[in-house]
Image (cartoon, rainbow, N blue to C red; front, side):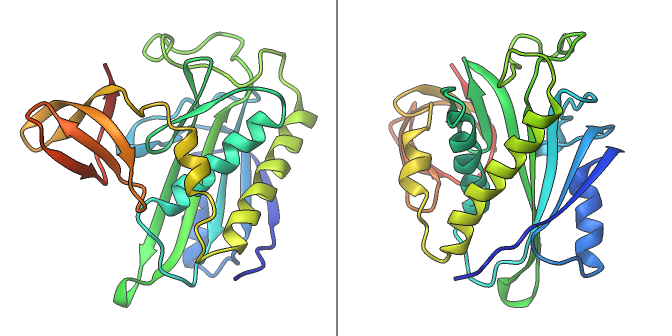
Length: 244
């Protein structure tokens, strides 16, 4: 067990909170270092996608962790997703998780998580940077046309800096609960219960291209159990998944 303690830092605008905290991690920044920014000019998601990060309407933050125990693939991503959902739900708002790292509110993507790790000898994690981007409020000019049909926000109100700070503290408090309990994975059931893909038809990436499948379950390693269009049962531990 650990006793995660936070050291909060803020910035007006950065290229990417993950990029900044990764550099700090290499230079010895302590576990629990949290950087939040009002805007990102090069916010990133999985597969090097751009994460729209306009000034003042979102929460863009990265947390530095130095886990001392072996963890299942995606454990930190799923831990952050559960903590984020619990935070959203504390405001009386329903949400769900699209495997593996997106959080949806009212059928639209409102947040994404990007965990980047440095692995040392023996497969030991030297550090992990947990990046979380949340569309807290609708941007005044609207979302870019490329994402306007699927992007959404947690709150429908005008930007509120006090709420933004409160949201960050609540979310980090929930992360601490689960992280301090490691290596016990106390968030599997919470993650699985919020999955919006269970029982659904999807397209998933394969070396041969995109293939059709149905989602059966989530295995204990947080891999998505699927039945392909040819009847094969397999587990996905990476790759792109799309709703049908």
